[in-house]
Length: 239
Length: 239
DNA sequence: TAGATTGTTAATCGATTAACAATC
DNA sequence: TAGATTGTTAATCGATTAACAATC
Image 1 (spheres, rainbow over the protein chains, first blue to last red):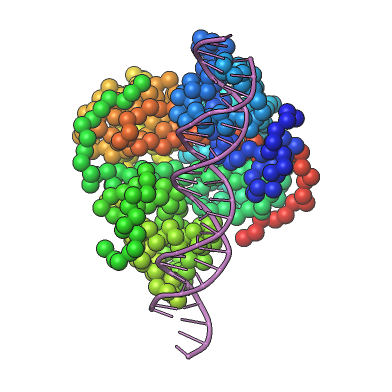
Image 2 (cartoon, rainbow over the protein chains, first blue to last red):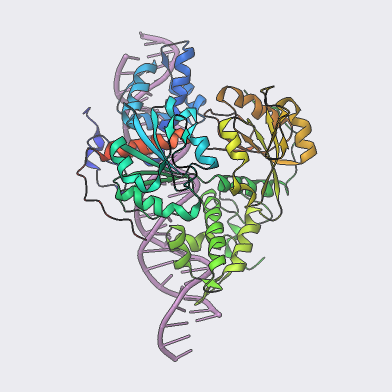
């Protein structure tokens, strides 16, 4: 709503739009980081404000990038002073859609799924695991973390009854596409995939993938390149 | 070693180098995907070769990008035919440094750490969890997945004895920087961080971060933008 | 040879960053 | 007013993609 010269350049491309401003994908990902850095700081709180230089250092990014990221939210800094921590935290939460809680369904309650079901980080950041589902008859009906495990065939009912906004797939790779299709049919449009397989979804569905082994393989690549170079004397990590 | 015009452009920038060619970061990440897509295909194997168009479709990327990615490995395709699956898989493995096994130490054997310790995907892709460590006295000494949990104070010994190449941090946020410093002091130069905190490391150390709650927050952002737009009739996912 | 598909070029697009005028 | 710090511009850099000559 503030005057902002960019409103004519609305033809750019694929980016995210809405009633609000555009926010580039790379910025969205970093906003999540800024949010918990600010949350963690808010508790200690030596001041009610923070400069872009300080927050950028804490988040491990360049301060110019931080300011540019925050400028997509609107103009909430005060020149010569910095950003009010409470205001900024609130604006980031609003932009990310973190007001209110969202219900998550977790499909696949094996090794990884059980850990995700018990992961504190979800609840503490406003996500409620509202349903657990599995295809294994020996698991269905048992209770985990206070939730009775439902059969994956009941997915559509569960999505409706629990108003599921996000589906988390933690099944083996072979089952993932079927579960994904079922989620999409049930109307879920946001999916987080832990199965090591590429999933096809219609264009209106957002999907993100966490590939644990791929992370190790990427590190492995850098490791193998390092071993051919001279090894520097070991330094102690900076604070 | 093949003739390739790029050898003079070696001034580009930060990128990864070595005795081998440069490989851009974005390409490294995708190579890991191509690798398991090929591995999965190799089992069914209707042909001994695959075209860039087919592999790109299976990996969910543009075929021009796939060809460019593969061109960093060298020239292993055959014009008019495609890529030999076995050769290509081998070259990707070589480039990623996946020949041989790498030993991984996992620090923090709580909820998430236990799941990671039991995650099949690591072993099946050449990573061996060689050590489990924790700071909680009630956990130290107990056996999980055939490994006795060591105290985190023994980290330097463990790294040396087990020839640890990669450290995985699955501790609470508050403990993560100390564990990270200890890993670096012990000579570990590749770290995968699951703790929701920004870690400082010297420049020669590679660090990657998996932030589970941030993934949900990013989905949440898109979800909140979608809800203001007209809802399309639900389509069934394409195969 | 004709058809297919690679490897590479060049255009484009998006993301990062230094620099600085605006302004608290 | 003087000092500090934002918000934005413009330059740069890296990543993606269409297009096509090379060649199997």
